Image 1 (spheres, rainbow, N blue to C red):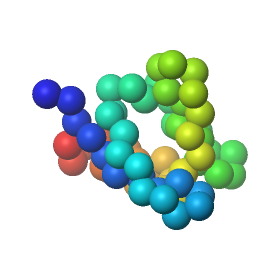
Image 2 (cartoon, helix red, strand yellow; image 1 turned 90 degrees about the horizontal axis):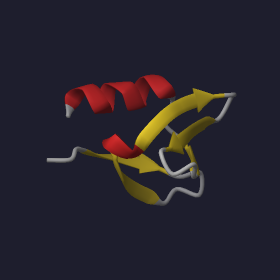
Image 3 (spheres, helix red, strand yellow; image 1 turned 135 degrees about the vertical axis):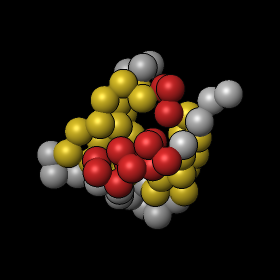
Image 4 (cartoon, helix red, strand yellow; image 1 turned 60 degrees about the vertical axis):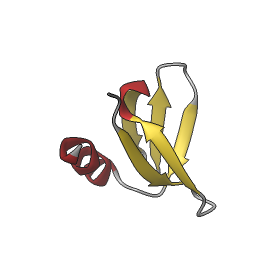
Length: 57
């Protein structure tokens, strides 16, 4: 079963993301999630928060 996390885009919209689609998470200074497809998502959560969400699932 795939694990899903809830994230917040910069415009405050909530999104649900399958963690198996994440390739990398970067902070420079905003957090960018790069998906396996190459798509990039800009989110409010920092990399440490995202890591904790993944570990909890």
